[in-house]
Length: 485
Image 1 (cartoon, rainbow, N blue to C red):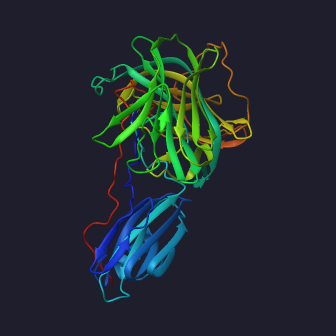
Image 2 (cartoon, helix red, strand yellow):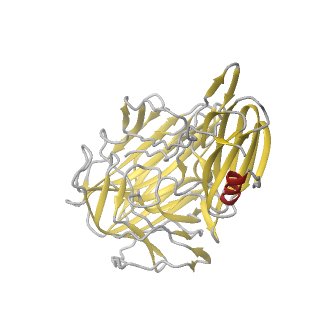
Image 3 (cartoon, rainbow, N blue to C red):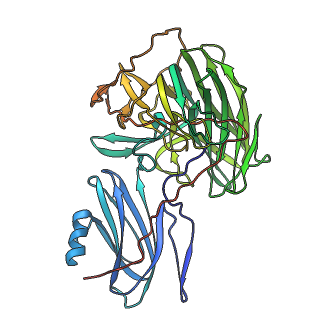
């Protein structure tokens, strides 16, 4: 399985020196540094959605004016020098925030007209809730059901957070067929995966640690065989790794020294399956002062639950640990704190095409009080894994989320309710796979707004998968300034 970093630059603490002056770049989700001559200004364009809060910080070697503007305000300022803004402040250390009143472009303007000296500037900004389209806005993508901790209320985005001790992903597959004529090395042309992904956050006396947990079913769709496996990634910091001293289980450490990356991985032998294939993937955690124990399990066609791997992560001074879904921010590696149950290519970043698919999905959390609930809001595409797929969509059929072939777009559902864990039955009736027109309606008393996209889940063969990729996007300004009118 491959771990995909967001298409954003990962900010590190950098110090830029100009003569005797030093300015540190603020540690935000986005940021950059530049020098600015006197009587000139620079701007940074920010794309925000209605309801997102834009928070920015600027540090400068001399006092500067900092504005946060809408598109209209910036056009007026750029054309005439007239200043109107959502927020404004001046100084050598500035913090500002404002909510985006509508979808569109916003501008951070840094104006060096207070001082006659050249300004050394470092800036950073972030958006809350997270931008769920930061990685995928069109196919290919992972497809299934995903909780980002973000709900859309009448077009405005609102974050929420869920802490759980366990997560379960239910699937009933009536048909599945995938093909990729040019797969990555060691990946089958007919491979595909269903992946249950979630972040584990551990808080302790020595700081915060974040681990990405993957529990997956690896399908060979040409011969109806499947295996189950898990990956654990260290998402606590840039270049964070795992070793046999820090994590133990039935598997081992897979390393890519050229990328300075490593992950824990284990996979069971392949076995035959018959359609319809009904199963549950589950991941849960318990913690003690110096370790977190993660249990990876599956349950097939109503048979007893099988815990196929018990993984111990050694962390000193643990105070709390939880599986975390949150729309308030990103992991230290700028990945989402989301929960994903998604179909995708088999592994090694594969993008496959599904020629056949008809499956129902559902996802459940076990909260700290022992109750079981569905996600409050689910979208139909994932972001944290690199594997993707073409020709997949998630649609709503009589209150059931169904993955079929096709590509109709993105959607969101509000489906939260407290309920018992899923019970696997002998009902063999397949839901219709005909296209559906998704409209705004109501389900279980909540507004339902389905979000569709191509599919992705990821699994792969142990020893040959699991290499994280980070994609950095350019967010610093162009190498030119604009004269202040």
